Image (cartoon, rainbow, N blue to C red):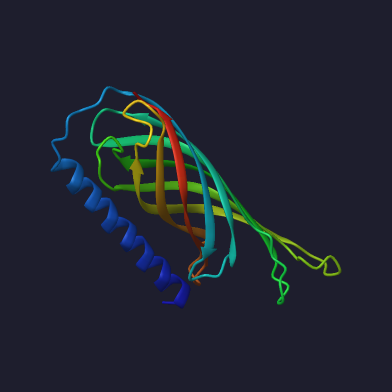
Length: 197
């Protein structure tokens, strides 16, 4: 088993363990149900290097639409954009990652941390930061993510919510019997949510 495949298997096990934790937490909670509705979120984060060195340092912008079910788990869709501008003393490549995803999240109606798990499709584009160098590389693949966060209500029960969270993204850019290629990165940032009341 190659090094990349071992890392992917470990990461998949981690995501499955988080999913079991979320299911256990959802089943064991008896919080008062909130009425169903829709919630919109915008996110701004810093994007950091993972084990596969997809990018080194950049920023992420995202938008999500969630169906607040009134139960223990909410469901939603999202879009993401990550940019590592590259350059610097080692002339890193400019890396852009765009994604579309679907996710489930333990309810943010409860005053405690939430767990988020999702699957999506990621497009990765690399371009040399030095214009004198030719060539660029683009690839895409299915990926997933797992995150933890917490929301606060500084504007009262009916106002927008402000949150902070960390998320790990793992992308199966190439899958083959010879080992394939994985990409990954971390994000840490803030979220603004409104609606769902």
